[in-house]
Length: 455
Image 1 (cartoon, helix red, strand yellow):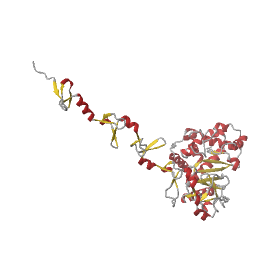
Image 2 (image 1 turned 120 degrees about the vertical axis):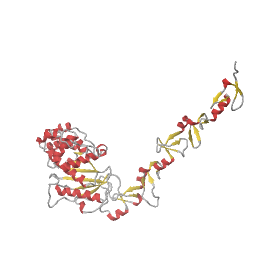
Image 3 (image 1 turned 45 degrees about the vertical axis):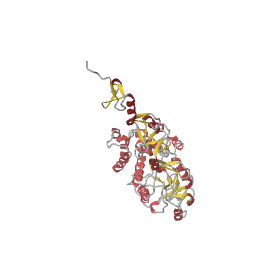
C-alpha cells in the first residue's frame, strides 16, 4: 500500500498543517492565517469608512483611496467639465443654486457683483465704463441700475453721477440720461422733435401699388441724435426700448422712399435694435365704414398664421407688445357693422393688429414686425399690407372665405395673388424660411378655384 502524505509546510510561515487545511496560491500551499495576510495585502482600507476593499474596485483622489459607496457620497461631477469634486472641500467644490462646479469652471463662468456680492454669470454681468474706479467692474442688473445708465443718444454706458438727466417725454417711463459728450453736442435741443409735414411736390404710386396713406414707427434702443435730410417727415420721442422715430402721414412712392431713407440712414450709422424694439405700420382708414372695416378685421384674423410666419418665433409667440388675436374669425363675422367702432375702441392695444388706433388716429396699426434697420423689410411690409388692405376692404365676408381658409400654404398663395408681385412673394417666402417656416411654391386648389372672386 503506497504512502500518502497527510501534512505539509506553509510556504509563508513554515508551520506544519494538514493538507486538507492548506490553500494553494499560484501552486504553493498556505495556512489560513497566511492566506488572510496575503488577501489583506491586496486590499486597501477606504479613507472614509475604513473598510478594506479590493484595490481595483476603489477610486483614488489626491493620494487617498475610497470605496465606491463613499466616493459616490463624497464626490459629485462638476456641471461645467464633468470632473469629480469633493463636496466637503469648499476650495474644490463650489455650489451655485443646485449645481456644483470645480474651482476652474467656477472662475470661468461666474463672478460676484461688486456692489452686493451676489453670484452672477460673467456673460450676464453688466460691466461699468472703463475709468479709475476699476476697469471691468461687474454688477448685477439691480445694482447696475443704481450706479450706471445708458445714454439715450449714443447708447453707451455711463456712470449716473457723470450723466445729465434729459427732458421727459410725455407718457414715457423712468428717467432718461445723456452722457456729457452727447449733451454738449446736442445742447439739449434734439431730445425730441416733431415730424415735418409730408407735402411732396409730386408723387407716384407705381412702386407701392396703393394710394392708401400710411405711417410708420421704428423703434431703436440706440439711435444717436442726428439732424439730416434722411429724417425729413420723421419725429423722435422716447420709448420703453430707447426711442422711436415716427412719420407724418405718408403716401405713394415718395412716402415709401422716405421710409427707405430713414432705415438706410439707421443702418449706415449703426443705430441698434433689440428684442424690445418693434416696427409698427399704420394704415389710413379715414374713408372707411363699419362694413368695410369688419371685412378688413375678418381678413386679418383669418390670415394671422401666414403673417406670423414672416417674423421670428420669439416675436410671434413671446413678445408682450404684439400678442395673437384674442378673438375668433366667427366673432368678427357675427359683429354688426354698426357696432364695429365700439368693438375696436374696447379691444386690446398690444395685439398683432391694434384696432384701438381707429379711434385714436383713424388708422389700424400692424404691430407684428420686429424692429429693423433693413430698408427692404420696411418698404416691403408697407407694400404687402397696403395692397392687402385695399383688397380686403373691397370684399364681403363670403368673398374672403372663398379665397382664404386660415392655412399658411393656401393663404400665402392668396396673398401672392393679391400682391401681384413675384419679387414680393419671393421675399416673404425667404422670410418665412429664415424663421423655419417653409412655404411651398405650388398653388393650392382653393386659390385657383377662387380667382373668379376677383383676387
